[in-house]
Image 1 (spheres, rainbow, N blue to C red):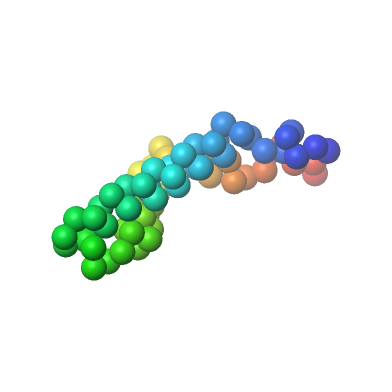
Image 2: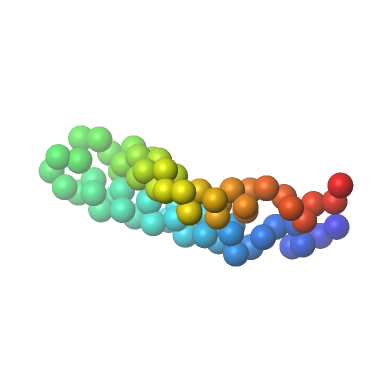
Length: 72
């Protein structure tokens, strides 16, 4: 079985876009005076944790991680 049939690319792309958005937002927030002490990587991690609490996003990415098209 090919890899392209095993991965739901739409859901995987959503995860990549959210990761990129958290990274860029963390880097932007790190430029602010109060947040510069924390660092952009920690800010990106915290933003990702906040987004994970949102149920619709969590359900979409969970669907991408479960291999529904995998052979049994």
